Amino acid sequence: DAGVTQSPTHLIKTRGQQVTLRCSPKSGHDTVSWYQQALGQGPQFIFQYYEEEERQRGNFPDRFSGHQFPNYSSELNVNALLLGDSALYLCASSMGPREVSYNEQFFGPGTRLTVL
Amino acid sequence: LAKTTQPISMDSYEGQEVNITCSHNNIATNDYITWYQQFPSQGPRFIIQGYKTKVTNEVASLFIPADRKSSTLSLPRVSLSDTAVYYCLVGALSWNSGNTPLVFGKGTRLSVIA
Figure 1 (cartoon, each protein chain N blue to C red):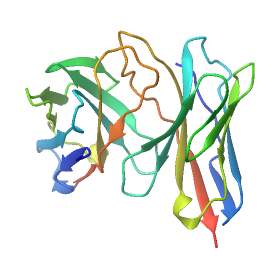
Figure 2: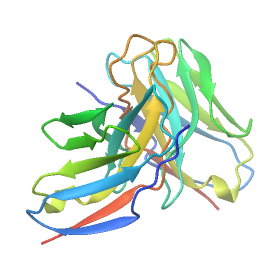
Figure 3: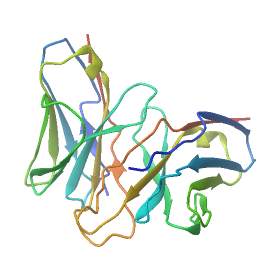
Figure 4: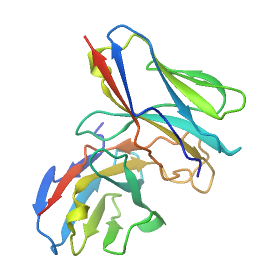
């Protein structure tokens, strides 16, 4: 049973460029959330996709956008990269709205983005 | 959202029991307490979740007092492989948002020494 996978593992970009990160959720999951983790900090919620729509969004500018495909995989796009966008980008998958007894999200290994 | 406070770091020797306490004075009635573990260069991993009293699984125990203003994650007989950052999270679960965004603090960096 494959867990959450992300690609690429590492990425180096320069300021002003655009980047696309990809995520495949755990088998059976239909919801994907993206988080940004700066060095020494906890992950910060960017947004969440369910049924191919952005359902919830954290405090991130419009330069951060995303997409979810019919197979539940997702992309995170960041435009006009800034030095401060350098971070580990984590994808987490879970099951969509339902009666829950706990909120467990499964994280991928992340994509390390470096902006020069 | 309830804010959490936990120690920045802790050291322990192998084989000892480790208790990490988290304060969440503003916890709401419908909030749950969840702990995640993160190893370097990996995504966080769910450890345990609870609402009140005590919860135990194969990895850890979670103790929550009656007032729920704090919680303690207990790791029995730690090994070197338990060296990681441990995050305490507080948030609500509901039918409409069964996937409430996780709100992480800076966590507690646990170092296990041989």
